[in-house]
Length: 494
Image (tube, rainbow, N blue to C red):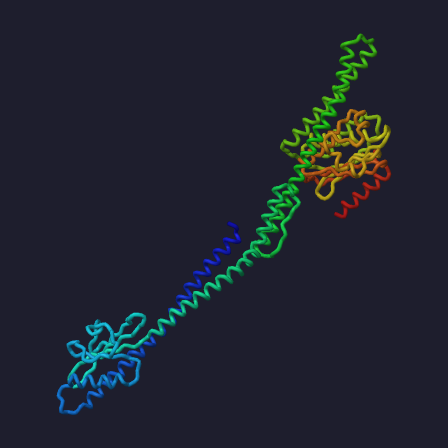
């Protein structure tokens, strides 16, 4: 059963019970009030009759010592002929009827319950009529008589029956009108639920961009907002999953493609060595191709292994001297004659895993060398800024188009594939750098313009060392010395 029908059903049940109990109470209250009034009037009339009877008995001639039954009948007839609706009956001391009006059909049970101190009454039904029967004692010439009256109260019972009939009709009409009105109200109140249900079905069918319409500002409206927020988060997560699946598919395709080229060369030259007798020069050339492509596969496998280990590893940072890192890099590239590498760095301490940061810097410098022509300048810098230690590697080579900059950290992605392969590149270096920097809660910043070069930088949390003096002044150009002077001026202001 729909929620709106449940709401409608329970509303009708509550309305029916409320109207039923309230109607019963109201009609009964009116009936009981009317009955109390009729009983009061009946008792008052009985007292008046008793007073009139006793007064008439006192006016009897004094020659009678005892009030005769005949005299009692005459007095009763005179009282009855007064034009009242009442019926009366008079009984003697032995509860034997002396006089009774025509049609008086009251019970005798009141006689045994009545005495001089107690007046009694009861409601009796005779056929379709209702009466109030009263009974009280009357004293006349040393006689104690029982005076009973019957007052017709049928009209009060008819009014009660009519009240119940009218109230039942009103209740039915109100329930019918309430059903119609509550159906509209229930439909209006449950509209947000229907919209949420429709949105849920649409999303279950794969339409993740569908959103529920907010039609109220109450709790259901807030529920709609929360549902839409959840749907936005779900759509974002699904988009991320789809991108991740696509990137994995691209990774597998690129990996297979990267394996195909060196394996084809290795298999071809190995088959040539196996099936032909070659002179020494050709044999050496074939073996050299096999060795070169094998080393390329080895380097690619090591890079992939480093990426996987880094992605699933746990970082154990330690305080590392920036001087030590740059000294290591300088020693590594001191015999690099094809490029002019300029070093500029400040003293400092940073929090990092030194071997991983070395790997990042080596990859960035190698990429700068691959993107530059022989003899070009490569600038490697390190400086402290706002509680962090920043690294940057700048080249003045081919540059990277803007639309390619967000993709170069993906595995096997290469801007110039022919150029990268010619220099034993597989597109894994920057992917490894991105993973290592993510592990250090940092990211790779890329500034590049085609034909003018590229600057790749990142920053790490600095340690407590406050010394920021530049080193290797002999290797700085004039413009670099001016920058160093500005850095010192900034430090003085701080």
